[in-house]
Amino acid sequence: QVQLVESGGGLVQPGGSLRLSCLASGSIFNLNTMGWYRQGPGKQRELVAVRTFSGATNYADSAKGRFTISRGNDRNTLYLQMNNLTPEDTAVYYCNAVSISTRSYWGQGTQVTVSS
Image (cartoon, rainbow, N blue to C red; front, side):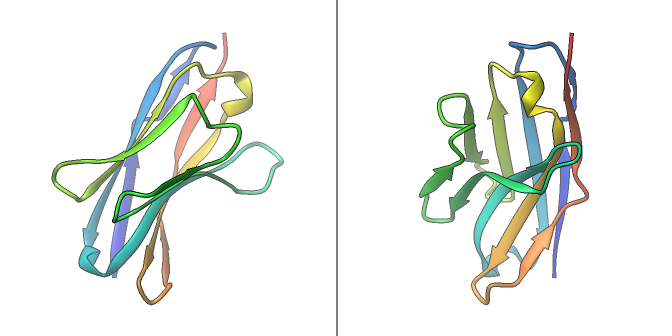
């Protein structure tokens, strides 16, 4: 089992920045990839960015050039640095982890609201 806990969401003005954190615990040695997804009001959940444990990354087009996914030195924490935020980035952001057996785990989500 893997537990994921997100933090760092909040209210920010357009053009501002936030850094989300995801702390993983449990059987993290079985994990292959970790990533961030989001679900905006009335929208389906969508990929934001993913990172394999070997360091490869993939970003949604909407995130390229503005968001950066990274892993902490402790190997238990995943970050999402979000810059130049717009109201369209308003969503609940979820941390996801996938094991080598393709089992998927989700955090509870953290709300990001971009508004003036």
